[in-house]
Image 1 (cartoon, rainbow, N blue to C red):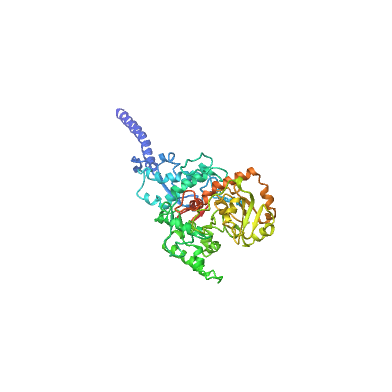
Image 2 (image 1 turned 90 degrees about the vertical axis):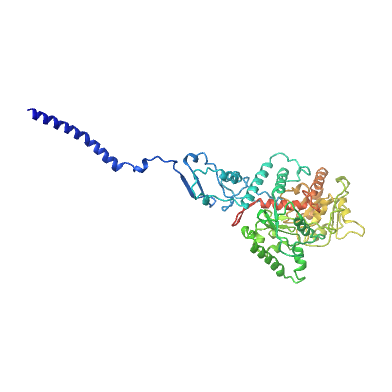
Length: 538
């Protein structure tokens, strides 16, 4: 019995041990089948790295960033925005060009863009400095391949973004102090914005003048004729040390230094009616600079400009389609019916300097000392003057309108005696009489169709001049008499105030015609961005 009891007791113990081991074996088996790899039981020295690569932005560019989950929330506002603008984002958040010609009124609409682009614009200039501050502790070895390198062009465009922002801010801001001159009054579309834009131009604008080409056609122009602005500007910009740069990489705009007046004089065969030689000269010149430099092809000519006061200035640009369609054309013949585009092109004042100087041309009596209502003297030149002479020649003592002045009568003295000076178009829309009137303090009466007056993106011509269409010539006296004496006095004083913007000085002075031409080019340059492949107009 004892043996049986002992065996029974030992069997019971074995049974308990077996029942105890079975669950352990089953648990071990399950762990071995379903459990993680042993390698994952080791703790990592760093948290996981989240790699964001080749993310296509709305602009069509690829950008990459490396960050950690702990940094995502803190850095979600950091945007490394390439300056090149392949989708044509408009940097002007006010949805308008900086240059708006209002005479005649043109609707220049900018491209509407998503709201987040405004934030991109605000951050882009900071990105040039912030990129280097990104935490390097989580950056893999290949990161330099993903990081965008900012070029000189990128930095140039970033500077223009700052200028745009400053101009927008100045529109409703306070006046900026200036030791020489502070624009103020209704003669300006927005005096504060103009002043800030002018100061930004002085601070930033750089012009590269191509050195290719030889005189007399290139780097030369008339300075003592009706086309004097061609020679004066070419000479002024080539001698200028403030705006001219010898490094094309730092240039905002590129000047093509040929004179259309010189092309007509030395290349065109007189009375041949063959524009071919001029066209070939301009085409060959563009081909030379486009082969020697990358800048023309980079922007398709959009950041290039030329200047012409000759009537054939617009026709010259048709030699090269990109010169006509993309480049900034600074033209006296600012005729919208012949392809002049106020948002892209610049209206140049026609100034007839027979002596090469403005000495003796500036100044005149006050409004109360001008006995004549209106004055014009000139021959039958173009389609408008015959209409004017037909209705008013020697027909009214208050309206001194005649072909030729009597012997001994001074043309400029007649301007100084008159309250209003009639400025009809000739064969082309521009007339030197506009500036002659301004020089002598006479209120100019612009008689033309499709003409954009000079600097009309800055100057409010309606505040100091009278605009009359060709159809209104028979009512000319009625129109002038409808202006009250009080209103005329205000207009005449404004003419005197804006005169500084049309004066020619050597060397140039601040706010004179040389600087106003540059400022007009500067405004057009603010309306687009350039990158290495193309330019995109706003």
